Length: 328
Figure: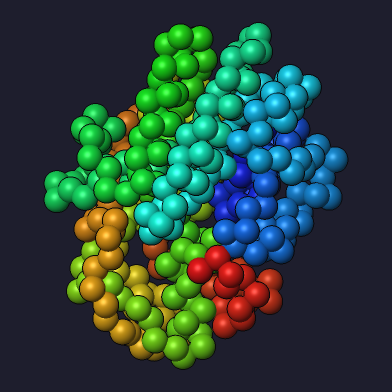
């Protein structure tokens, strides 16, 4: 199978690419190495893939419609996995126009290009738990209304879901959306909480805790996320939308404590007010993904943290180092 993976040099993308190559697929990665975090971090993510004969890297910005069209028409993919996006809730509040251009316009370019092919390729794209907004009721189900996003990032992800449905309806594109809940594990983006906190804890510096520490996130190990993506590619017919989470939310204060235990250090906590755009909880109902994809996340949070710390140590990427800190 020929697969295009946008954002394939990133955290989830590179883990997915390794899995696809191991299964014998031909893979083209599209990434523009956006300076949101250090280029060398992403390049290291692809070190193993670059040695594989079925792999190709194309440095393309998804806002470049002509480049996307040329790639899709030339490679003739059987599947497109669209993970590229400007990420992060708080930065989206500062620059909503950029987030709209990359996340929405870029997605339209890929959808349009996919619809030029016959037969239509399978199209699997990343949405986000952020679309659910700030809600007290849980767990979150795909059938819940998602009409009140609380950040520009969340709004762009909801817009992409609407566009995906439109392209399926108008052009018969088989398409599956995946609402990722907080992924963590080896190659964790350096701007994400677990990676930032690991650096601070290891250096003996204070960890900023926004709010009272009771906010909850549905942390999901990246290997389980990748398994869900693979299953979605294999079963991508018609139009579908799935939550990919672990369905066991962890409080912020428990996450910090668990990370300290995995690192063998005691965290120093500094308290701050809650931040604009943050939500009280994320909590995935994964019953639809379980029934239709066979999705069954099996990595406990503590085990995932231990694997993440092992990866940091084995790669020499001590969390105390600052080489990847530019994206924080």
